[in-house]
Length: 327
Image (cartoon, rainbow, N blue to C red):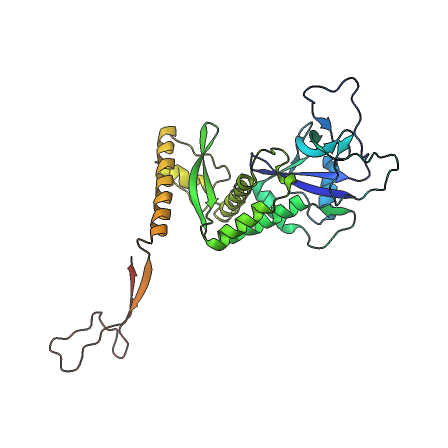
């Protein structure tokens, strides 16, 4: 049996790893005295990258072409452990070993696991393709199911137009990103439910990150990937200004914005000011946009010089109505 888990990383990628019940439950002991600062150990029953790909195939979710095994040692995860091994997930079924000590899992240790790195766009497709019913010998872990719920929320936000553009720092460069807008009470409640129900395994690479921060980063990245795919090639700016470069980067595969860094910094500040002003106006209800349909005014019989506000059409046709855009 293989249990497939997911980790959300700070590099905006979903990393898949798995537990294999056919592998030993205990890790090898290191010779000598325990180190003051223990180094990461190889996870004894972590599934190989090849085994993960085979598990995805059995789930009916073939690994996308841009999903590649991470090099060499994979990732280091902080997991509940005891002296001779990490704690298995509840879904992992294995035969009982009589000589297995019943010591409690009372510590957090760092373990190395092979992983498959999945970019946000591919993670969206993968999460939505997972089967709802069980599959023989492969179990979808709670952390991966959590990714499915985040993907569903991201799709709904994009479908309702609840997203906004922004410029964010990416190293020493600027990147154009779409970000989720969750001001609606229903959306805010769903985001809160997500971070409250987040399995700890989702944060196993960086356990100090808060569930709120991880949930926000995950939903934003999935919203960005979805919007970018829908708008692929929709904008072909001349890049005469920072605004042109930013608009084109919002639809390009590479979000990095070219141009003068000082101009981009100023544009990022303007975008943030615009967004804060919009939220302030919405909170204070200073104004709202609306449409008004105006009925054509007809001259009353006997009124001297009475004329309709809008000209009538051909003989026998009714005069047109007028749509007014108002604040």
